[in-house]
Image 1 (spheres, rainbow, N blue to C red):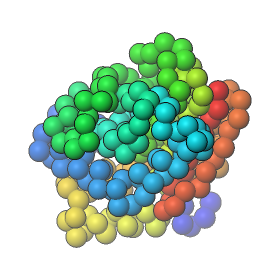
Image 2 (cartoon, rainbow, N blue to C red):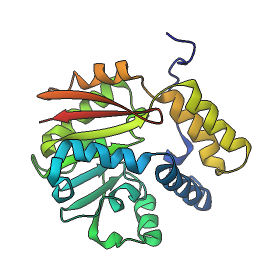
Image 3 (tube, helix red, strand yellow):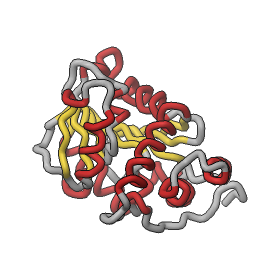
Length: 228
């Protein structure tokens, strides 16, 4: 393995804890919104949806898994149904408080990605961002298979690639105190829990999708596209 690619280290993140202090939790969600806005998260999310939906991508009904404050769903406001699922109700309630783009148009659902509370073929596309790294390869294969169950078209997810450059960058932001205390811990932990493109393909190949594509997105993001 390249010296630029550290070994994967799986450790819990503070934002996932049930007793994370509210103010620090809110700061971390704001950090994630800024990271998505200024460091390519929104652009990546929109590009992957376009690849999945073509010219009709804004009309797709979308389920975003692990949605957090649902900022990515806000960034693809369109005619289709938008559902944000998260296992922490505090994240969803905070999303409603800070939304500037009519969060009432987004249906909020508390649920577990490992057992999606939806019928087969409920939505056109399932998405997630900065989410795959939370789970082991076996768990991810199961989650992606269940995501394929609830969609009519496909699954489009993305996450940060495990690499030393994004690791150094997020640590640098922490040293400058440009991110909150939870993000200063969770940011590096997220990178070290991430996957390489090859590892992502190995997971995707276990899902039973009719077609698989791994997209290398910049900066240091991996997209996984699965067609029903």
